[in-house]
Amino acid sequence: MRWALLALLFWAAPAAAVTCEDVDYLNRSYTTCTVDVTTEALRLFHKDAEGNVIGSFSALEDLPDVTKLAFAMNAGMYHDDRSPVGHYVEDGVETMRVITNAGPGNFGLLPNGVFCISEGHAQVYETLQYVEAAPACRDATQSGPMLVIDGELHPRFLEDSTSRFVRNGVGTTADGSDAVFVISNDPVSFHAFGSFFRDYLALPNALYFDGKVSRLYARDMNRSDFGFQLGPMVAVTE
Image 1: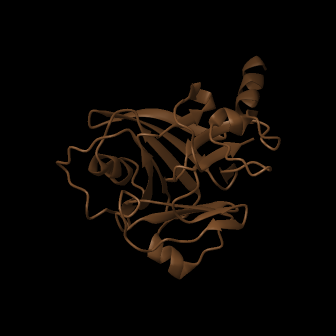
Image 2: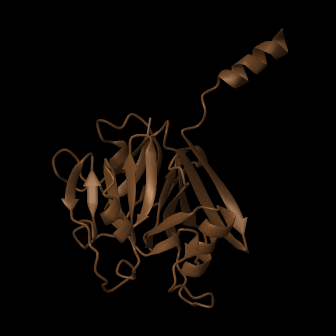
C-alpha cells in the first residue's frame, strides 16, 4: 500500500513548466530550456502598464500579472533606448514593423528571422517567409541572423571564425509544439552556436537573439543572470 501511494503521488505530481539542463557539446557548455508551448504561458514582455521599459528579470517578477516566473531570457536586439530594432508584437499589438532590408551588425546579416508565438504554437520563420506566410502571431520578435534555416546553417557562418561571445537564441520543432531556448556558457562562434541547434538539438529552424548581453532566468536551476538593462524579454509565467 505504501509503495502504491508513493507511485500515485509521483505520477500525480505536476510536470515542470520549463525543462532546463546544462549540456556539454564539443568541449563547450550550453544551457537549454525547453518550453511545451501547448501547455505553458510563453509570452513576450517589453513595457509595463505605465509604458516604462521593464528591463530586468527582477522587474519582470514584480509585474502585477506575473504570479510566478519560471523562465526568462532576453529576446531580440534593441536600441540605446531599449526599443526593439526589428519587428515587435506583444499581446496582438504591433509596435515595430518588419525590417526586410540588409543593414549593419548581426541583425542585418541576412537572412534574419522572426520568432512567432500564438496560442499553443511557436515557430521561427526566416523574415521573407514570415512576410509571405503572414502568420497570426499574438507575440513576435525579429532578430538576426538566422542560425538554422530549414535544416541548414546560415550561409555566412565560418567554421574557423575567431569571433566568439556568449550567445543566446531559440529554435522550434517542426510542429511548433516546443520552443528550445539556448544560452552558451562559454564564448562561441556563430558556426558553433548554430551547429548546436542543428546537430545536437536537431531543430529545423533557429534564430539568434543576441551576444554579450545574453542572459537567462531559470527558477529550477536557481539561476538569474545580471547585467545591462534589457529590451524585449521572453518568459514563462505560472
